[in-house]
Structures are given as C-alpha cells and as structure tokens.
Image 1 (cartoon, rainbow over the protein chains, first blue to last red):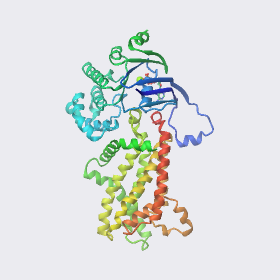
Image 2 (image 1 turned 60 degrees about the vertical axis):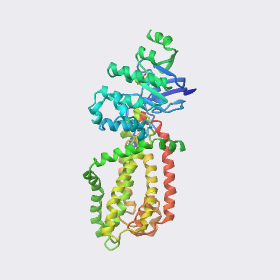
Image 3 (image 1 turned 90 degrees about the vertical axis):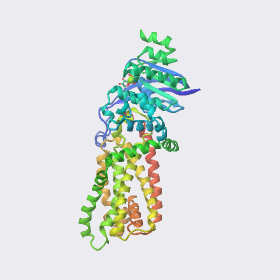
Image 4 (image 1 turned 120 degrees about the vertical axis):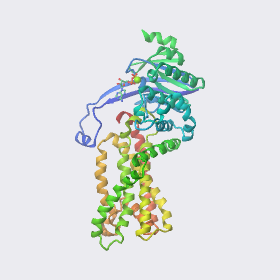
Amino acid sequence: MEIIRVEDLSKKFILSSSPGTLKEWLISRGKGSANKEFWALKNINLSINKGQSLGLIGRNGSGKSTLLKIICKILYPTTGSVQVNGKVSSLLELGAGFIPDYTGRDNVYLNGSILGLSREEIDKRFDSIVEFSEIGEFIDQPVRNYSSGMYMRLAYSVAVSSNPEVLLIDEILAVGDSKFKEKGLNRILELKEKGTTIVFVSHSDAMIKKVCDRVVWLDKGLIVGEGTPNDVLPQYAQ
Amino acid sequence: MFETIKELMLYKNLIISLTQSQVRKRYKGSVLGVLWSLINPLFLLVVYGFVFSFLMRGRIENYFLFLFNGLLPWIFFKTSVVMSSNSIVGNAGLIKKTYFPREILPIATVFENLVNFFMGLLILIPALLIFGDGINLMIFWLPVVILVQVVLNLGLALFFSAVTVYLRDMRHILEVLTMAMFYYTPILYTMDMIPERYQPFFKLNPMAPLIDAYRQVLFKKDIPDLGSLLWTFIFSLLILVSGMKVFKHLNRGFAEKV
Ligand SMILES: Nc1ncnc2c1ncn2[C@@H]1O[C@H](COP(=O)(O)OP(=O)(O)O)[C@@H](O)[C@H]1O
Ligand SMILES: [Mg+2]
C-alpha cells in the first residue's frame, strides 16, 4: 500500500536579501525586483509503500533536506504534489522544536504535543522517554544547559516514542556517542519491524545498508539513481 | 476550511500547552507576576480616569467603573491583535524545523490574552460590587459577549499574523492604527454623545457594539442590544473565515520567509 506519493515535484527558492515591509513595497512599486531564483528540486517522482525504508543520499546541497521538509509540510512545493497518508514524525535538525528556556520536561511535553500526542499519552511515555534519553536528573534543567549530545538524545527519544506511521530522519544520528548511535539505530530497526515507514538521510553507508530497502540518489535537485543499497551505493561512491 | 478545523481539534493539546506556557511566562508563576500584568490596565484607568472624569463631569455617573468596564475588553482586543502579529515571525525556530498547524500560534496568543482578560474581570466584578451598583443575572450574557469578541479577535489575529511575515513593519502600523481606533471606539465616552450625523460612521466599528454590550451586562445590569450583537457576531464570523483563508494561502511561504 502506498503511503507517500511525490509527483512531478519541483521547488524554487527565491533568494531575497531582506524581508519585505510595507514601506519598501510602496516605494518600489512598479520596479521589478532583482531577486535571484534557485531550483532546489526538479521534477521529483517518488512512491513509497507502507513499511518501506527509503534512504536518501547525495552531496551537500543536493536537496535532501528540502525534500524531507516538503514531505512533512514545513515547506510547500512550487509545482507538483505530495500526498502522505499517515501520521508523520520528523527529526530534521538538532533540537528542532525545543525552546532553550524551558526545562527538558517542559520541552518533552511541548514536543509531544507538536507530534500530536495528548497529555495522557505523553504522561504514559514520559518515563520511558527519559530513560531512553539517558538524561537523568537534568530533565528538570533548562535545555540551554544541555550539551549537544544531550539535546539530540532527548529530541530523538521524543520523536521515536510517538509510534509514528512515517518517520523522517535527517542526518541526526551523526551526533552523539557511538553507544547512543547504536541504541538509536536499534530503535529505528524496531520501528521498522513494527511497520513504520522510514525516510532516512545519512552519509554513512553502513547505516543505510542496515536500515534501507531502497536508496534514492539526488544530485543538484534531480534523481540520478535509484535501487537497492547494494546497487546504488557503489555507483555513488565513484 | 473544515479540514483545518478538524486538524486543529487533533492538536488541541498543543494549543493548551502553548497557551499555558505563554501565560506562565507572562505571570512568571507568581502572585506578584499576576499583579504586574494588571498594572498596565490600572495605570491607563487612573490616567484616563482622572483626566476624563473632569471633562465628563455629571454626564456619566461612576466614571471610573464605566471606564474600566470598557477598557478591559479594549485591551483584550488590542493586545490580541498587536501581539499575535508577532506570533509567526517570533517563532521562526519552530516554523522552520517542525510541522504543526501554524494557526495554533496566533490562536494561543489570543487565548493568552483571554486569560489576561479574565484576570481583569476578577478585579472589575468585585469593584462593581463594592463601588458600583453590584451585578445581577444579566451577567449570564457575559459569556455570549466574550464569545463574539473571541471570534473577532481570532479572525484579525490570524490575518495580521500571516501578513506580518511578508510586511514586517505591520506591527508598528498596527500600534498606530489601534491607538487611533481607541478614540474612535466608545471607551471614554458613550455612543449617544456623538452628534447624530456622525453616528453612522462610528457604528461601522465592530468594537463599538461589543464595548456597549459589555457595559450593558455589567455596569448597567441590563440586557444587551441583541440585534446589534447578532450582527457583530455575523460580521466577526466573516472576519474569521476570511482570516483563515488568507492565513492558509500565505502559510505556504512561512518557513522560507520567517
Ligand atoms: N530557505 C532556503 N532559501 C534559499 N535556499 C535554500 C533554502 N533552503 C535550502 N536552500 C538551498 O537549496 C539547496 C538544497 O539544500 P538542502 O535541501 O539543504 O540540501 P542537502 O540537505 O542535500 O544538503 C541548497 O543549495 C541550499 O542552499
Ligand atoms: Mg541537509
């Protein structure tokens, strides 16, 4: 069963120097603006079935993060369409959705509700989230005092706790010690067993091979290769 | 639009927890914090009260209570609109990195100011009991009046929060506009003090019948003008529907523009 469908998707960014104001708009009326355009994604077609794990690879700036952000509706396509039939949880950046002034506890609740969980659901999961993150008593400290590893561990623990139907992960496991990396990876594999659909960006061939059934290779916003990890990774390495 | 409402229901927990944390931040979790947030309306009350109770001498009885009764819903209106215009651009971090229905941010700001309005009522009502004519059963109309105002505030908050992403000076413009609107709304005076021929112009203001309704049910202990309240409700609903539409349209660019 298809859970994510991306059709003829293109994304254009407009590189403008400053945010607009009414004053500017009134002054510059009639004159064409000198904004540059940049196509970050061009004509992407993808179909991901339920329970599949897709790896996204490609050099920096090839559009991987942009594609994830469009799938989870942070960004919108310029042309084309995206359809997702399920609850999405995403881990795009370190500490995304964390408010530095709040304690770890408050941030868990805030993030849980951003993921669409009810208060009771978060209550039920709270202890296991804290345990998984290995934050310990720091949970009642403002997260601004956390190290980047602690930040990541807590964010990661919340995101994987919500039993999402679709999980989007962007290079996030690059941080943290190797012990947590392994634990994090095992949790992804567990979710995969349970039928979660995963879209995974990583620069680590080993991780891609462990997690993904299929790999899509992006270059300058175009899909240039697609297939099993064993087929595509060697081509990409060249 | 019904899809948006359905999704917002799913995220009601986020609305509640954002409202709570904003309220907590405002009051800093202490009694002193609560008092502090009431200083602004009380200060306005004292300043305007002294000046205008001389000018209005004899024309309005119990001028301070009359004024306070109008000032509270006005502040609810003004702060909802002005603060929420900052609610999207002020949360760039959340918007760029996570998904949730963006409508929640201006909605939580309106709710935060609604809580603040309730705090004000907790002073106004005892004041009416001690210094005024008390209250009567007409106070049961109060939730209806509040509901109409919440609809109006939400509509404007959604509209201006989205527009501010594209026109960053909107907040300053709103500060000026609301200052002018303060004098255009019968807060310091009553509608019947306006010369007959200018009244149609003053009646275009949706806040005028609302302030009047608040005064009817509290200060005057009387039934509100139901006809004009109904019209204000319909008008506010139209504002809310248009606000949601504009928001939904502009929403597509938020993560790139904030
Ligand atoms: N908000 C934005 N405004 C302008 N350009 C952007 C924006 N986001 C990404 N880009 C550009 O789009 C391209 C693709 O970026 P990204 O998707 O982050 O690549 P990747 O994740 O593969 O490294 C880059 O050239 C980047 O500079
Ligand atoms: Mg990236």
